Image (cartoon, rainbow, N blue to C red; front, side, top):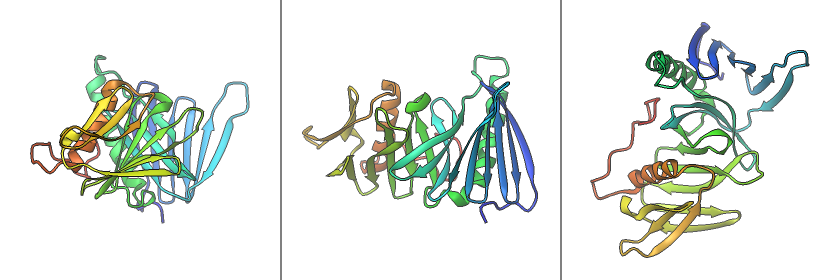
Length: 253
């Protein structure tokens, strides 16, 4: 069973695109905003794009891998990602109402509640991913999947429809840098060894020597620094890094 609820329930939240509606039933889930609707029934996701005076555009994807709910850092977007051969693809997402708007704080609070309910409803599809965080804007978001003992970072390359594994970082300091079929392993034990250099996240030894670097293009420098900060938190053994956010939480810390 993909859903744990014996009774259905409904939640709504105001977003930048309009009112987001979530309906959870014992064996099905529906998420709708504006002209877009997502249905999940058992192991199939159906996406609908409703068009005026034209037939709806419909596509279906079988859930053979993991399906996760992700929150954005620091923009608070909400996204749904599905695992496909070769990577992860973001299939649905919304942005929150600007906090500069009078209803911004209240709208964000309701979006948080809806996101927590959605995450709970899809928990059985997440597999061993304890928490998912997306970083960046638009189609070029980076996904950070927290497996507890390691992070896996997925990033989209040019002309690709899904984000592919770019980094795998373990809490014992091992870092796997993935470039196609080539995988380079290095070891980092301090957050100071994880820095940003241009479009790259750079890994350096204690003496500053360059160990490895990975290109994470298409996201802002601020977002790239946030990614490096989170990687540094996981590998750091010096005790001066902030602790990682609890996996049970829903909003990114």
